[in-house]
Length: 189
Image (cartoon, rainbow, N blue to C red; front, side, top):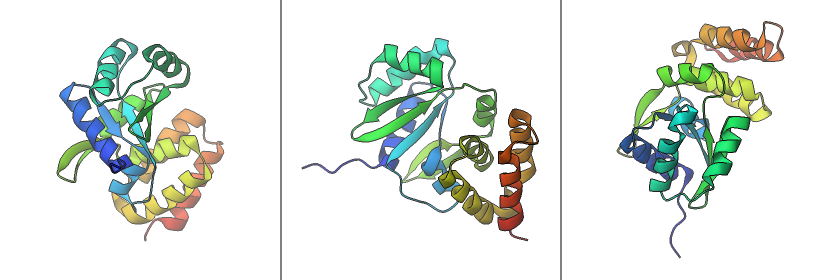
């Protein structure tokens, strides 16, 4: 029986194919987190595809070039309605996020290039990753943020992250107070 592909292997394969097809992207989620903080296990790939609707055909072509079969009409519909769609590459779930908020374009401009296993790939910056984790605001995201702040320390632009969340959610949003607490409790002094 052939070995199952890991999320990292799938993420790197997608990175190569997207680059070959001229599709702007950044790997997010736990794979990006591993570049900025403490690696943790994951079974899926979060892929940010920085394309407007008129570029969906190029994105879909790249996904097919990676060996992914999916219903393009459904993917287009879900992307428009939810800002993301799900595909499967081998046995790995891939959450494909397309820009649904203005901050997505800022995430494109702040992404970072890393070499992983001899492959160059784009990943969300620690700051963009933090903003997205605050927007999702799940328990596991808050734990990841605590570790991210502790590992990144002063390299992390905590003020920028706070400003972006305030711009989107307002000063009184619980995400802002959670971020303030995380920075206060976990930023190395």
